[in-house]
Image (cartoon, helix red, strand yellow):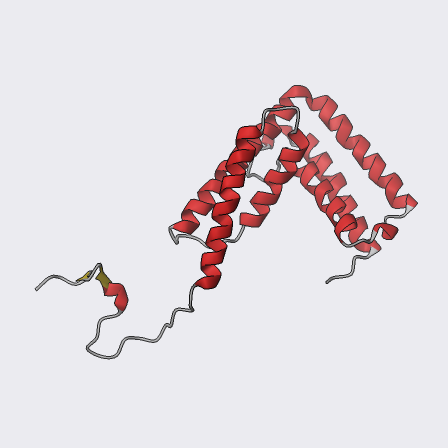
Length: 192
């Protein structure tokens, strides 16, 4: 397990501060999957909170860091106030987009068209936005869908670990590789 340092916390505080300022300064450029996203401050705050809570390094969160954290939280509150209801609705639209992206990634994964890279990131962002928007928007349908998708994700991961490694050795001369057969019929070769 990596050891958390004061530099890690300082770096994450800076990322949190930067995310707030970029979100404010680039309001017209924000989009769900772009460089500037409405949820960026919440994702940065979550990373900071996760680091200090999971590693038990709360002692590194000194009074100076606490004070800076409160200042940055005040900046976020100002951003929320300035953005008003429209900003919160943008967050909700992003939550819907991320949930659909999660579903799409899993569909492609199930079809063998992509790997699992990015699934955990999208899933974590969904969790952050669900927590942030709880009680403000109706999220019960999204929560139910995400729960179902989590089961699918777990099944795919279990299937991946249960699969034996495929050998990339070529078929002996005169034999067709097994990929040329589909339901007992040869594919990819003209019928004779």
